Image 1 (cartoon, rainbow, N blue to C red):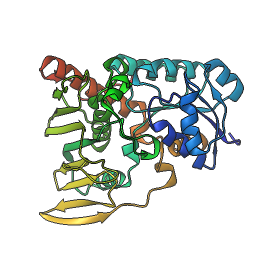
Image 2: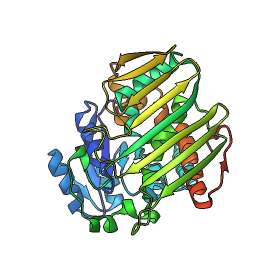
Image 3: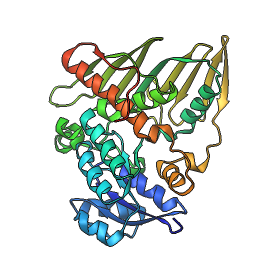
Image 4: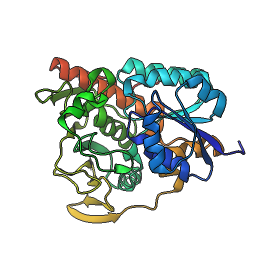
Length: 359
């Protein structure tokens, strides 16, 4: 390819659509050529904020005919992801699916199979994978600084998905807004577990070089009047010990403005030390031989700052996709999510294979 990558945005259900489109506007090798939604009004609110002049479509076939896209961002409801992947794969369009990956393991596997059959890229965007502190922690793990990772502890969340839009713009939702939002509808893939647990399990599997738990136990809290959880605690049972993943809607502050308590992010315990890496921090804290040290965040290459930059480098230069973007790691992380959901429903320990084959 010598021309700019032609990018379209599909679905304005997830607030990250604005963030994704902004990355395309800022990339020198990308061009936004259209957006699609079931409503013409929702895209206008986002494109207006971005000062993005691009055609708005409500018909998929017309979008494909008129724009001939190379790559699509998909920010629909989670439950709709498989249908969009099927359509885009049939049209030969590469895609970046916004997290969470899917609303069932069957759906996730169907997506991977459809993309593979059409030889198109299916990448899953995990925004926390691009946070420099977490990438610095991964580099230290790969360098063997803390030995073999034995436990991953994660706390993730924010005040709730209705308190911000793209670019983290502040919103002020009412109680009635929850009833109208797909985020609070289980049939659409809502709930804090689906929203945030994938970060813990996907990046946790990345930190552990593909190792999965042999079992999962989980519990969740669904407040009165709601149909989905706003808090979950998940235990991953590994050969080396227990890892704990917590998700939370309803923190007092958002981690991108002021870290709540507990802090949002990761603590990685290894055989030779430990690392704490908090969301949006300017460094990580390393403990080795009982001595703490502060490690500044690494300088992150342009190709490792956004999902789009990584995918374009893959398409243009053959650069390998970053592991959290790939079907293998995302599917493994999703299998743990689904095991946690099963455990919540049965109050039982759910067993998993040591490694999940990509089907």
